[in-house]
Image (cartoon, rainbow, N blue to C red; front, side, top):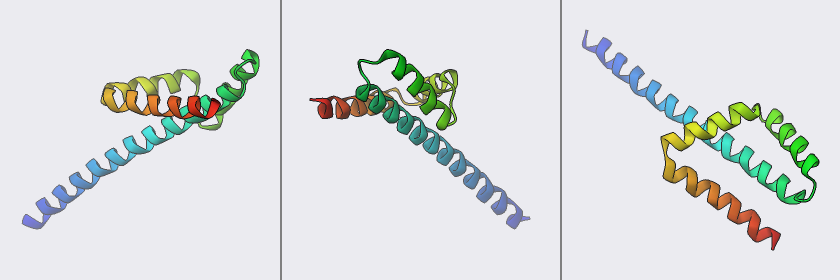
Amino acid sequence: MRTGWVLVIILAVLAGCSGQHREQDEAERYFETYRKIVRFTYQNIDKEEVVEEGVDAILKEDGYTMESFNQAGEDLLAQDKEYFIKKVDEINRQFAEEKK
């Protein structure tokens, strides 16, 4: 019976790690999409209609709708506000520097 409990504990730990990986993967996916959107926006800063269509295309390509992308951002913000703000700021600064 002891072996059964050990297996249950191992499975629980693996399930927990798997959940953390999914959260990390989702965060990476979100920030990579955000980076693409910022890059596209900076490249087309004076073309509002082009930006709107381009952002929609980027979201679709990455498996998001505007609503699901916004929800993913809200979820990430709720999980770790400091990290989220730091990451968004880092991406924004990177493109602002490139634009100079």
